[in-house]
Amino acid sequence: MRQVLRNGSEPGTSRKDAGNSNEVRSFRLAKGVPTLGGALMAKNNCLVVRAFGRQLDLLRGEASRIAKGSKVDWWVDRTDKGASFCFEDAKAKSVFASVCTNFGVQHHDG
Image (cartoon, rainbow, N blue to C red; front, side, top):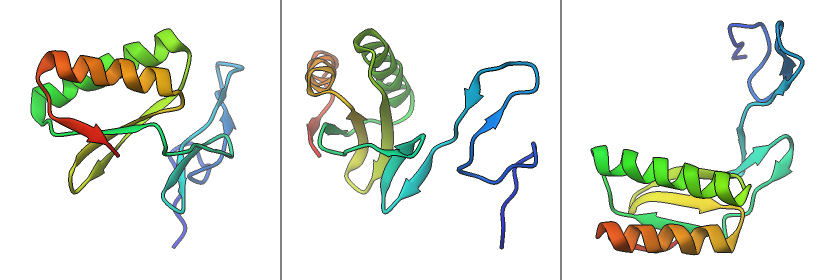
């Protein structure tokens, strides 16, 4: 079964916005590793946290600010042990770990 998005393109393909010249790319999974624009993102800078609800939303916001400040990409995956926050940079991961410690959130490398 083929899946088609509202704009007529298939998932995992890039398209041009009608009113904007910026290219929009969607994420897709390749053997469990997220890709962005065809480049594989390694999962070696991940931190698994045990947080739910508003606390998880707060951590997502902090992860976004950290990644934006470090100019790196980040993503979050659900695992059976908790939420896995992954960063492209080890420094961003360590900053996020310190935020988790400050908030009293259980975390470990994942």
